[in-house]
Length: 191
Image 1 (cartoon, rainbow, N blue to C red):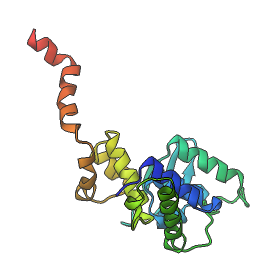
Image 2 (cartoon, helix red, strand yellow):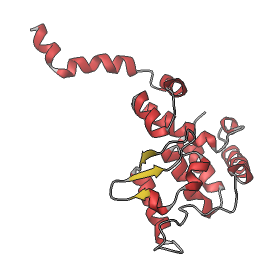
Image 3 (cartoon, rainbow, N blue to C red):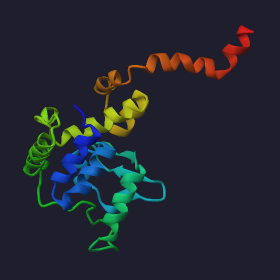
Image 4 (cartoon, rainbow, N blue to C red):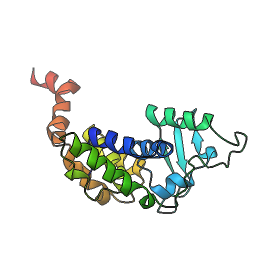
C-alpha cells in the first residue's frame, strides 16, 4: 500500500507541526523509523546530497541520496539546531520512541478529513509508518526506476523484497523494447 498525493497531504496536515519533517523525510527517503531516529548531523552531507545510514536493518551502512524536498527539510531543521557545533546531535527530535505512539492518531484524523471532504478514506485503513517506506519504493517504481536502484537506495537485501513494486510500472516491458528504436542502430539496420 502506498500513499496517493492527496493522502500524503491529509496525513501531513493531521500530524503535529513538529513531526511533519519526520514524515516528509520518511516518504522521500524510505528510511526505516529506527534508521531515521538514529541519524546524526554527521550523517548528513549537503555537498554530496547523501544521507549515510550508519547501521541499517542488516547491520551494514548505506547511502541514501537526498532529493530537493529532503534537502530543504534538513536545511530547515539544521537552522534550528540547539548545538550547531556538535556533529553527534540528533537530526530528528521526537518525544516518542516509536511511531505507533502518534502516527495511528494522525492517520485516523486524515481519514476523517478525507471522508469529510467526500473522498475515499478506506485506503488508509491500517496504514502504518512503515507504509511510508512502501510509498517511497512504489513511487520510485512508478517513475521508472529499475529494481536494482530501488533495492540499493531502500536498503533491501534481496531483489525478491523489491519485486512487489515492479508491477507498478505496467508499461516497463514495452518501454524497454522501445528504447531499441531510439537507440538508432535498429533504424540503420532496417534501411
